[in-house]
Structures are given as structure tokens and as C-alpha cells.
Length: 180
Image 1 (cartoon, rainbow, N blue to C red):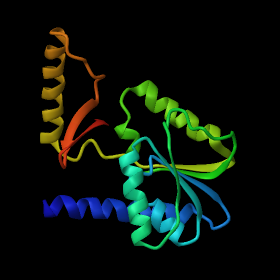
Image 2: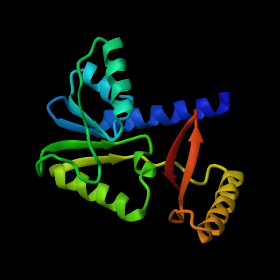
Image 3: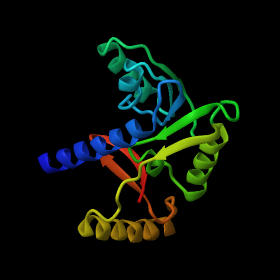
């Protein structure tokens, strides 16, 4: 567990370095799929003009609690990343961090999210997307292949078949969809 946490911390450190190289105080920023405010809250606290959108009201609740603890005001709204309810060419920078794109099932939905990001970006704007590394474990990859075969068999009996590469992960007592 400790090793996994250290890998996650190193991953987050790299994400921060990427953001800090590209973000400017005068930019209008969207943290799409902002989750519990991992990037939204610290950036708002530093004075960046940022807002967060997430599909999960529970995640937004956690972001607001985090912001309150940090004595910071944030702007959030619930929304679907496949249909961002914002005008065209509105943001200088869109963040899609923490492998959020991998949490969206089906390739056509992931493509819609990317299309939406470019729609709301101003000309010359920047989209930062981070992806998980699907090659980090041969054992994990083999496990996913076996799970896919099992799901294919189960779908034969009326269960829903998830597109290849999409899988269900139960972590910390929650079920989430992930794409690798």
C-alpha cells in the first residue's frame, strides 16, 4: 500500500509541474472532472480564475469541504463532460487531470469529451490531459484480459458487455468505470 501511495504522490507531483509550466494568473481556467478539488482548490487559493465541473455531486461536496478547510472560495457546477454547458471559445486553459478521461466509458464518449474541451477553449488555448499508464503491471494487464473474457461470457447470458478496455474497478468501497 505504501509503495502505491508513493507512486500516486509522484504522479500528482508531475501533474503539478505540468500545470505550473502552462498556467498564468490572467487566464480563465476550467478544471473539468474536478473531483474532490485536488487541483481546483489549491489553484483557486493561489488566485487563479478557475472553475470546476464534475458529474458527481458527492465529489463537488468534497471539493467544497476541502475549500472550506483551506478558507478558499471556489466556483463549481455539476455537469457532464460530454456536454459542457459553456459558450464556445471561453477558456484559455482546460484541465482534465488525474486520468479523468479514463473514467469515461466507451471510446465515442471519450472522443466527445475531447471535442467539448476544444470547443470551449479559446483559439490558441491549452488542453492538459493526464492519462494513467496501462503498462505499469503485467499481472494487472493479464487480470484485465481475464476479466474481459469473463464479461464476454457473462454478456452471453444477458449481462451488459463493456467495450474492450473498459473495466469496473472497486476501490475504497466505490465502484467506478475505468478505461485502460
